[in-house]
Each structure stands twice: as structure tokens, then as C-alpha cells.
Image 1 (cartoon, each protein chain N blue to C red):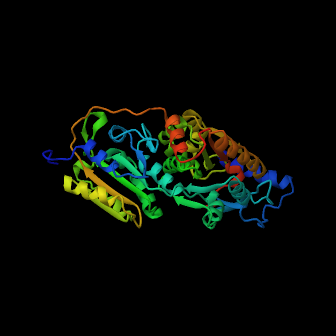
Image 2 (cartoon, rainbow over the protein chains, first blue to last red):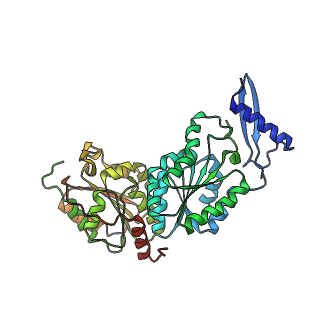
Image 3 (spheres, rainbow over the protein chains, first blue to last red):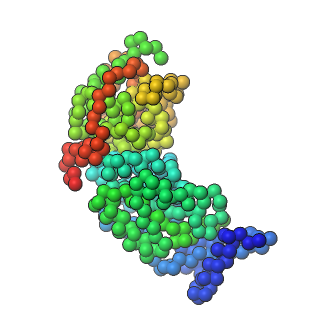
Length: 221
Length: 195
């Protein structure tokens, strides 16, 4: 019996072959994540290849944040955010803060706004569940909120423990009053980011940009 | 804790706030918000009515955005819920952030159940372990007088002081619960647009 997940893997390997994409190409390591599947002693490998392999989306998101005068960013690390975190940490004009749990970033962003500064938060989908009651603060105070959520548990996921929270991310955010904008491709992410920046910092909305696991590629095991 | 001779929380908070000068103040939900309001409403106060565990972190975000001194006045239960936040503040080391925990060793809003601090946990020791520049416990009038002078001074990093107070229940002093109004009022005070 082949699991649903295995079928997914095979189907998408097929997709890439049909489109003539060389699945062994690894010119843009940021987008090519190799997954290993161990089954009956054999090792199958495949790469999730993003449709827009030439687009350095972490750099583009970084540039958009800078252009929007976001000079304060908090995060709990995620592999999907690693390049963006790196860019922000090396920018002397940006203050970054690593958190012990994601809800801290919600409170810090509200405080920064009280002091006239725009703060954004980077987290993995599992971290959304850690934030729920803290989101009362931006929701009731109408504080601008901009969260970037990298998804796990939804696309060629190896670890079943990631699936429940991954599946609950958008519903949970909507339930507490946070709007979500989802990006399936790097191109889409750039448009979504621009929109979320305006909605949060200009229209005082509580926004989460959902970066799909398909865009990120599955985690290498 | 010996209730005889214990500090009164309203008196302690009012004494500290008399020395606030330009300090921006964030108050934690429950009695701390009532204490800060009872000492005199002020545009430079942000009163929390919920989001338990957020007070120190709202103060930290504010301290990173503003050059002014930021004081967080909160309760033991509120700070205990944000224990990880002390680690985050401890490594970031904002020089202008002072956290004052008004510690009655109980959850006052919910029926006076004994909190962790009433069972021996020392929040000042937690803060010290997290890398705060200065920490201390105040439990009497002379200690309070010294703290009133201390918090006016510049610091090389974040500070956390535990002020042990009586667990007596006091009449509530209720500020506005309109979080948007209080936010806009606060931002206008600092010269930012209210929208």
C-alpha cells in the first residue's frame, strides 16, 4: 500500500518531469529541498522545485519590509525563514529579537507601535497556536500586526505531528480576528506581502501572510 | 509572608509614580492597572485589561521604539505567565526598561489563590538568571524609599524589582477599557498620529 503522502510525492515528481524540469538541478539551493523516502530498503529522492526558481523571495520580502520602514522584527526560527532572518540580522538598521515563544512577538509589536515603530513577526505554522490569547491585544486595540507564517504539515510532510496545527492555522487566525493572505508561489508572495504591509500598517488590520509549504519545499530528512 | 507591616500596593505604586518624570508606563491586567489608574490617569499610561503575560513585553517593544524610560507595573501572576519574556528581555538588554512586580503572592482577581511566588519562587532571581542588569526585592518602607530614588537613575540594562505587598483587597479604580482610545491617546502624547 502506498500512503497518500507517497502518492503525492510520486505525482509531483511526475509533474516536474512532464514540465521538463530537471529534478536534479540544484543551482538555487534556497528553493530546492531534497527529501528522502526510505521504503523497503530503497532510498527515493526528489526535489520540490519552485515554479519561480529565479526569484529570491526572502531578499524581495526583506526589501519590501525595508521600503515600508519596518525596522523591528521578532522571530522564532524556522528553516523556511532562515534566509530572511539572516538578512535582517545583518542589517544594522533593523532591530531583531529572538523569542522563546511566538506570542511574545505579538505583545512586542503592540509596544513598538505605541512607540511609533513598525514591527513584524516571523514564525512557523506550529507557532500560530502559541499566540491565540495574545492576539486579543492587537484585535481589541486595533494595533497593526504583520505576521509571516511558514507552513508545515500541509505539503509532502514527513512528520505527522506537524499536521494538526498546520491544518488549523488559518481557521485559528480567523477565529481570533486575524486576516490571512496565502501565497502558493514566490511571485504570489511578493504581491501578498505588499498588500499585507498596506493593510496592517496603513489600515490598522491584523494580518498574517501564509507562505505555503509547496512554495518552501518539504523539509529534508 | 507576614501581613503585619506589609506595604500597601496603592501606596507603593503611587510613591513610585510620583518619581516617574518622563517615564512611559505599561500596567498589567487586574490590580496593577487599577493601582496605576488610582495614582492618577495620564496620557503616558497604557493600561492592559487582558492579554495576560504581555505587560513586560509590551514594555519591551515600547522601550525599543522609544528613547524614554519605560516602566512596566504588573502583578506576580501576570509576570509568571510571561516568564519566557524575561529571557527575551534579558538577552536583548534594553537599558530603558524597568519592570516592577507588585507581588502579593496571590491571584487577586480570581479568589486570592496562592501563586508560585507565594510558594517560594523568586521572580527577581529568575530575572537575574536571565541577565537583567539589576534586580531586587523590596518589602518595607525604607526599601520603597530607596527604590523611588533608584529607578530615576540610568541603568546599564533592564531592571526588575519585586515589591512585596499586602494581599488585602482594595476598591477597584477603573481606567477606560477602550484599548483603541488609550492607544491613540498614548501615541498622540508621543507626537504620533492617532488615525
